[in-house]
Length: 328
Image 1 (cartoon, one colour):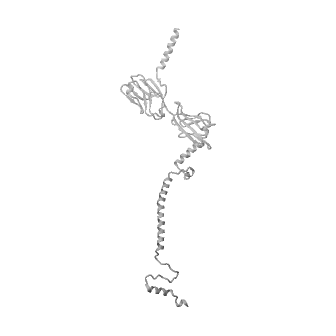
Image 2: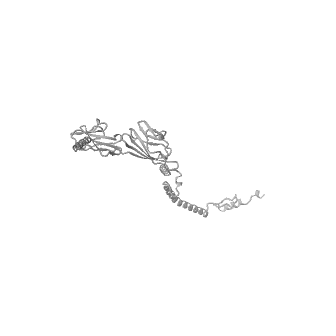
Image 3: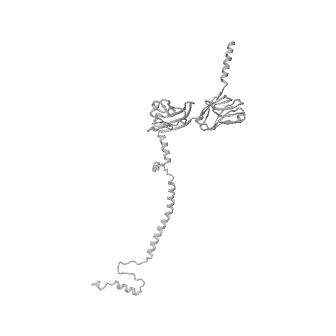
């Protein structure tokens, strides 16, 4: 009985020895890309407190002591007032993918806290047509793996399809002839069976970096998606025949000012035409009542003798009689 108690004491001592080191956070700190991140650590220390990347303990990021705090590297800071209260939190002003991973806070070289910083994965929805190339942005330079979860009928099995390490690409045989690495991982000649969820995973941290939700429309499918594309193109570049397609009385916007202009022109020109016709009829009637010249009786030798008096009448009669030459 006494030996069991001694063994229990030794076990308890060993457990306490291995657990009195650094305290790991219960859950990782997750932030969106380029947001600020605060790594918490609340312990007791009156000496020098320093933060560093866990696998680089001799390369401090920020530190505090009883007199002040210093940002050893740009973008990392601690607050002295909080340090004096036992709050040794580290603030990262711009969290990007290069800042993911484990961080350690130590007091005079003794580990206090270990915190894992994660960046929320990017999410992209892709709608494409059969035969086009699928471009998967990798976003980080670290080794990654591309996982695939099929949602298309008859699609390939889910799981890892490719790994990328620097400029080296290794893919499953079914993808080898289609995959290439440019600015992104390109999968050529997509088909509806390629529809699904593609996840770019950081192999070192085992974090998702980018999630692509892909839908590939076949040549005879996806009339709705094609219609949406058609509607977008119609808004950006209307067709000349487009008004002919609508049979519900719809008129384009430019027709309204034209109709108003036509109505105004008709309202102005119609009264003017009526007035012009009335004036023309009035002038004709006046000409018939007061002719300026007498009408000829058909005789070529008859001329008006207005203003000649009696002499004019005799001269007119003489001219009207046939001459001797005409009688012969």
